[in-house]
Image (cartoon, rainbow, N blue to C red; front, side, top):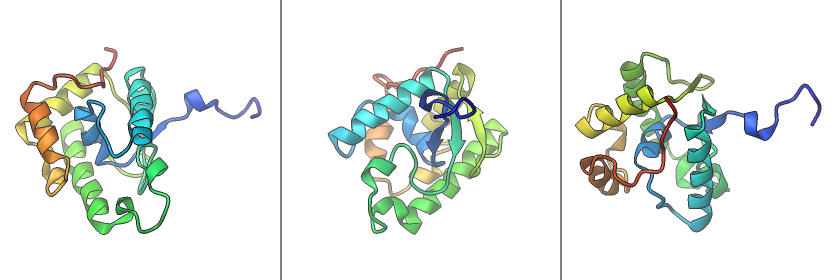
Length: 152
């Protein structure tokens, strides 16, 4: 790595739009131990103030388990979930959530996202998600046990 390039710690966390919703209720469960370990690392980076870059398709969360073109993360239904999440989060936060957009989470944004998630305002993307019942319970509990916390 040369002096002009960024270190891995400075690289933005690459997220697809619907993962902005998923991270709100992440309590350490997932598809595999490898997936969960990577997700925990990403959540820690976000909580420490890492920049987010919105991407289309597999991101830093799902790329480790989406090795083939036939994986669910490449399906049109998941891309539609990204579109619905992007629209609702854009409307809520007032920043365009589209591939290439960059921003940071802070405590105020996280609070707004969680409140809107709990009230259902930004849950259109969650329709037909296999994790929705788990996320419903976490939101109903006041987000007890979630791993993402942001600095002020």
